[in-house]
Amino acid sequence: MKKTIFALQACACAFALTTIAFSAHAQTWPDKPVRLIVPWPPGGITDVIARAIGQRLSETLGQQFIVDNRPGAGGTVGAGAVAKSPADGYTLLVNDMGGHSSAPSLYSKLPYDAIKDFAPVMMVAGSPMVLIANPSHNVRSLPQLIELAKNKPGSLNYASSGSGAITHLGMVRVMRMTGIDMAHVPFKGSVPATSSVIAGETGVAFSTVPA
Image (cartoon, rainbow, N blue to C red; front, side, top):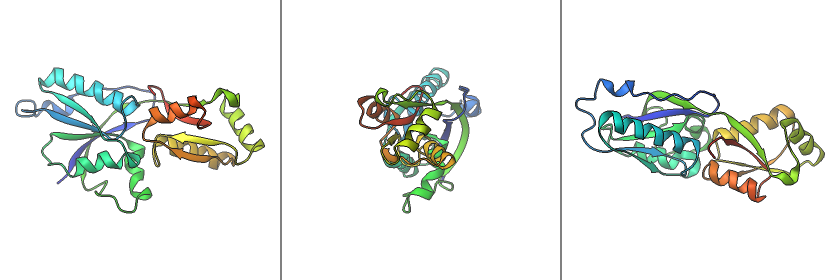
């Protein structure tokens, strides 16, 4: 049985919110609270979008939509929780497209099939990513980061919101395109990753705007 997934693309600049997909079922669904499982910690872009969706759906359909954060293992903990839930439309997954699509390539033993166990609904929102750096590195642009990394090979590390997340894959792409090398430090979400850069525990990161 397939579960439902909302897709969140973390590389566009538009923000969209719609309840059109649910209008045909409004008379019979939902007749009890609905869980929106977010496989990332509170405060990140996926969490912010899920709460906006939940509020709008609650107002439109007259039923509670409760955000349930289940971070861990690059979003696979939350996705696994949805896959194991009854396929009755009352447990939905709000995830980013990068993390969900890359998980099968990164984890050899997922507790679910990323394609067969989920039924995509729509892409509901997008958010730009921004490059952040600890002030001690004096990096103000991507060219400056590339120059620093080339001058000090192996000395820089970067934070991400998790292995396979868009913030991880984005930095991998930059490194491959420019020939630089930085050590990867994954976190359970964009908020702790951003905090690590601010604290100087890591050097740089791609981050989402809300974080």
